[in-house]
Amino acid sequence: MKLWFDKKSKDPTYFIQVGIRNGKKVTSKNIAKIGKHSELLKVTDDPLAYAKEEVAKYNEEAKKNKVDMDINLDFTQKIRASNQSVSESTLKNIGYLYLQRLYYQLEIDKFFSNITKNRKISFNPDLVNRFMTYSRILSPDSKLGSFENLHTFYEEPVFDYQHIMRTMDLMYEHYNEYIEHLFKTSGKILKRNTAVCYYDCTNFYCETEYQDSDYVDEVTGEVFTGLRQYGFSKDHKPNPLVEIGLFMDTNGIPISMCIAPGNTNEQTTVIPLEKELVKMFGEGKKKFIYCADAGLSSYHIRNFNSMGGRAFVVTQSVKKLSNALKEAVFNDCDYRLLSNDSPVSIELLKNIDKKNGLLYEDKAYKVIEADTLLDVGLYEEKVLDNGKTKKVKSKAMLKQRVIITFSRKTMEYQRFIRNRQIERAKKILEKMNPNEYKKGPNDVTRFIKKVKNSNEKYELDLDKIREEEKYDGFYAIATNLDDCVKDILAINEQRYKVEECFRILKSDFASRPYFHRTRERIIAHFMICYTALLIYRLLEAKLNRFDKSIHLTVRNIIETLQNMQVANISDFCYASQYTGSKTLTALEGALALGLDKQYYLPKELNKRCRKNFKGHSIQHF
Image (cartoon, rainbow, N blue to C red; front, side):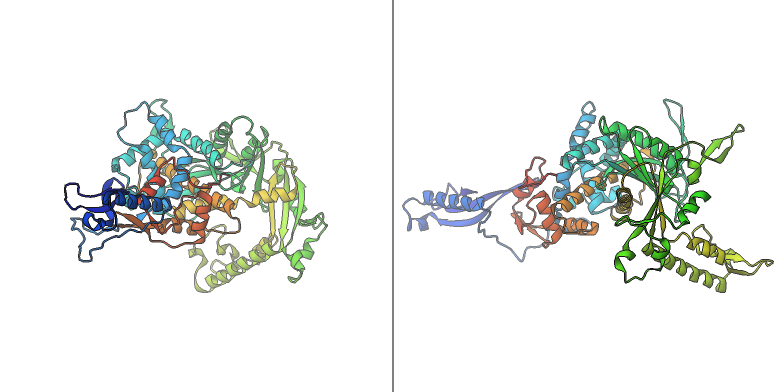
């Protein structure tokens, strides 16, 4: 703050004036009147020196962030007219500054600086990627929609729509480098625990009715399958798909991803991406445990993860076990309680009273050696001399064991679901022809069969129901580890976090629909989504480690960041238009940006926008 008065006036009036930089706009305002020169002569012999002392007092108070300022409001002043068709909100979001702190710590600006240092580029690709990432988390929309909403951020970044497309092309060109850079720099924010690497795949529908045609590489002449392809989907929608594979560490934070055509066998995506992980981890960190569901645990995958110090923990279908192993599963001997390792009978658990809480909540387990793939009923494709393929039993030997568990609670849940399906099957028998009903391996029509010697009569298949009931409560895991059973089961129980990552991408970040058509832009779109997921998961990990007693959901965190908006008060200060919450308290505790105040001077917010801003008592993990 400074002193201002009209030096040409014979009787000047002294004011306390402040300079304001509001974004790109610089202005000054008189915030307090000290008095006229003639009036001040009544209280002091030197009005100018007195005025300077008053300014010094204001500056001292300003250092304590507590000053009294007069703001004049003209209630007759009208809003400036505009040619825009729709009025816009003047509120600005500052919640993204928490995300920006992590974005800067990932050093993505350095990555873009390195890949563009020998190229003549007139725009800032880091600025584009930065705000496209924030938009994906806070207000998911198309690239055009995100571009049109840039003014809602406090910084109001400026770039053209074409710069978004050019940045996406640039990202695609450096796909592997970008993913590796994110992994390495994220380790500076949070120590990455890659002792166990979880993997899963999912499909994303495309906004088109036609799949992509194959294309030829101009350099090598190799023929590649188009990215958008028709493939199997649970929803049976008639749209082409793009397949995404994701590796995650034990903290639920992404490690790497791959993008493949929608008709790709997901098992073929595992080993190539794992090889990239081994290179990315470097020397000394190549040993890890691969964990996935049964659909991603073929012989080749298990065999690959039995070498180089790696191991595997994968789910195994009990129904697909060989007859010898099924006999061992249903043989009610050698089962032990998971809690205390004491012998227990499956028959006892099936008939135990629910009042016996400890036993009712417990699980039984048995370990079965299964060193041959023939025992676990796996198959592989064999190419015949005529070029055709045939599924044959794998003959190779693989050291592994199958851990069988039984849970009374799981058994009751599965029977509850089946009973509801049986009721639906009965209604189908009463009201419609089962032949006209949509059928599938897990559909309720599997409980319906034709009556013998009749082409039109149907009945419930009681044998099918009894056969399925045999497996209720049983669960199997295959592994080549010799560790404690509890530890192996604990590893497998964390697989849900991969599904949670996909749910965040699809539901909270609205990764689809996407309207890009070219392979390059589609892959770049998912690179932005991946960056958003990584930043969010890092933020979530910091919040959890700051206060483990507070459980914050994805919506709690995102809605808090969305609601953190400020209103411009006469270009002089900003007033918070959001309330306090447990989430805001945790955000401040973990990142300490000082965004829990009621009012902000523009210079304060400008300071927090800078990369080198140092928060107070920031905790590093």
